Amino acid sequence: MRSINQKSLLSVFLLLASPFLRAQEIKLPPDVEKLSSTAKETVEVKMDGPMLRWASKFLSAEDPDEQKAAKLVQSLKSIYVRNFEFDKEGAYSSAEVQTLRSQFSPPEWSRVVGVRSERDGENVDVYFRLENEKMAGIVIISAEPKELTFVNIVGPIEVDQLADLGGEFGIPRLKTKPSSNRVAKVEKGDHK
Amino acid sequence: MNQPNEDMKRIDELMKTALRREEVPSGFAERVLARAEQRPAVTLEPERIPWFHFFSRPLVRWAAFTAVTASLIAGSLHYRNVRREQAKGEAAKQQLMLALHIAGSKLQLARSKVNGIQTSQPRRERETNRSRSKS
Amino acid sequence: MASRPANNQLDSPELGFAEIVRHHQSMVFSIALHFLADRSAAEELAQDVFLQLHRTLPSLKSEDHMKFWLRKVTAHRCIDYQRRRRAPQISLEDAPEPVASTHSADPFLERRVRQLIATLPEKPRMVVILRYQEDMSPEDIAQTLAMPLATVKSHLQRSLAILREKMTRTIGEVLI
Image (cartoon, rainbow over the protein chains, first blue to last red):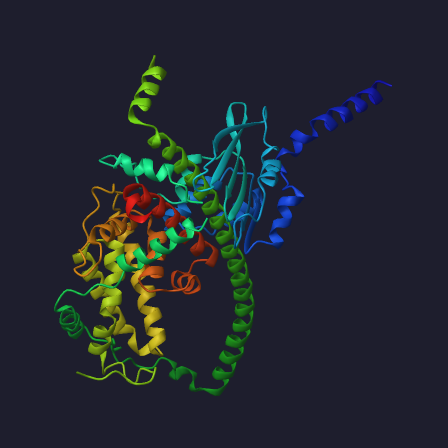
């Protein structure tokens, strides 16, 4: 009897905990997934730990980018990237993106960046997942007028190093005489 | 609505103008030719005594032929497998780099947006915020 | 002046090397100049490319093949040179002044554009140069740089987005 009770308890626990246990298997909502049929180009990259380790063997020690990548991936558990590019604006709705965003809520996820830009329609959200006060994963959702990107990286990731791989454009804030009038005009300007 | 497209067209034109080909420094071709003349275009091999004269004997030739053929077949199979693995590995590596590049560029986008917000605040407001946060 | 072969074939690597240099020197030098933003380094690199061409000429089959080869070798040499030099990222204000065009509509704008391009990382910078200086398609750029097509497009897109943002901030009134 006791063992049955324990088994029942375990089942209940697993059922309740399953959203968290499955946290790492984030799936795109069907509405977002179907965007691949209308997208001009799609990219999907899905790599688990063993695959990452194997692929990183082919990274060149002489290429600085590939060296950075090798360091980044050595303790990652998985990477999932899904990217849609469209010919025209308005190929997806904000509701579809919101459905995607709603998966990443506290306490498991913390939104560290949430930018909405009406000027150019580029919106970016970055979520961190912490375990024992350590980085355990990152999700990036970038919704641009003609592009939608979802990134899920599981494992301890050095965010600055990852950002560097996107391009050390190194273009600093304009310090001198940026002509604040001009900036104000651009900010106010209605481009749509 | 068309403004971003117009902007991109102008940027495109500006990029083409800014990056059009430039005149070389005067005398460039002459300097190249002068340097080329100092180095031979083809390196001549010194004459060597043929070592393969040993293989002019028929039996030796047949034995060598068989051994070489067998090892070539084995080698090429192994080589093909290695090449296949390498090709798969290269493809996986490219996928990995692409994924990291996309992720990194979106983080960069987030960063530039955040920086943009900070810059667009009037200077007084930024200083006020800074002094508030210090206190 | 020796005349170039009328067809696409290279009749003899010996003849017409001078003509080949004169025909392609602007392309090679400009790629190096726009990448390195250093006139003397660009000339040195361009000379090395042609010297290498001189040694390799017998193996090149056609004019197209040679052009592809020149672009590829120049691009890779530029990237290697930059990495060996380990030039630090520079601010816009400190970027070296490239040679000013003497026949441009707005030399200030063009100079700013070149300064901005010079701050891009190596591979995106070369992608942008090949796209706009040589008017190459993304597919050709991918082949030249041995890079996946998606990566080339990603580099182009991000570089242009960043450049656009920076250009409209500094010179918004001029563009908008």
